[in-house]
Amino acid sequence: MIARLMGEGQYRIDDGLLERLNELDDRAIAALERDDEAELDACLEQMAALVRSEGQELALEDLHPSDLLIPPPDLTLEETRQLFSEDGLIPDLPAAPA
Image (cartoon, rainbow, N blue to C red; front, side, top):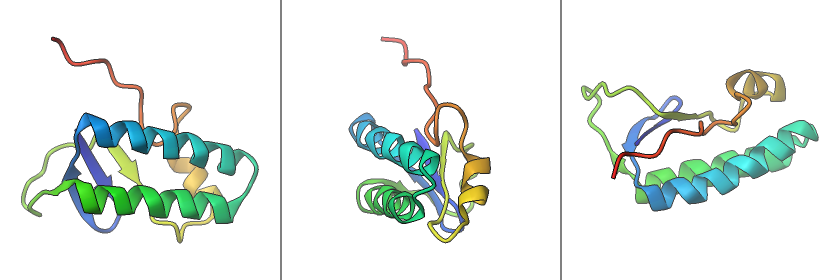
């Protein structure tokens, strides 16, 4: 799976990291629904830090489509709200065939 950190680049992430990102995504959605910008920013920072530390950064010329997008924490609540879908930042993707 490919994660894009807006303004930074793309990273390949594994399923274990995706599960942890999903938990943060759920917290981010709840913060957004409460208009809690501080909590939302903290969740986005944690998501980006996990991707940076545990993901594999792709070369700039590698143009894989991104499966998920993590915005920077400096966006307004409304700007961030526009990036979320009903599934959050991380869509519910079908499981890979066994």
